[in-house]
Length: 256
Image: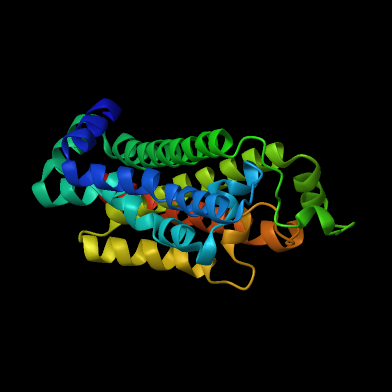
């Protein structure tokens, strides 16, 4: 069923558009920093020129990618179940593999493919940044700051590559989770307008908090674990709760 799901995505040209957006947006940062390099001779450290660090002006690419990530992932993979419901294909698949397997496949596939496409995007950007800005030293002055009690900040200044890789996985895992939530909503709700609205507002609820979920995606900031992890853990727990509740409701509904 996973292979069938994947083939349907690859045959859907609309579903491929978010792939180009997710991979393409981080390159806006590289282009801006290349312009800074050519205009002012600023040689950014490769890690500090990479997408998650947010070194570009106004953070436009970060806003476009991170804030609207659920929409891209829904189009890419997670709203697949809505189409199944509208075409009647959902009943065929449930009769064939069972409701439990059907739901787990939809949620699991959404997580895996979303994690992978975001991971590929960020890693490509990271590799290109390290190629273009190889040998750069500029760290936006962070090496001159001191936060003795901030373990994460000190790790970032002492081991920037390790820190950046850690944040890559935090971001990609969150992407997979929000895709799973979107897939769950698509299994529970029958119309895309409700699925997209519910998933987007759920994501933005955590993005717009005082201790924003975004803090967990941006390395080399002054925010410590006490500001970051509560939002990330709350997001994970709430997401797991939503996926579990919808799974139980749908299984019970189809087994009665």
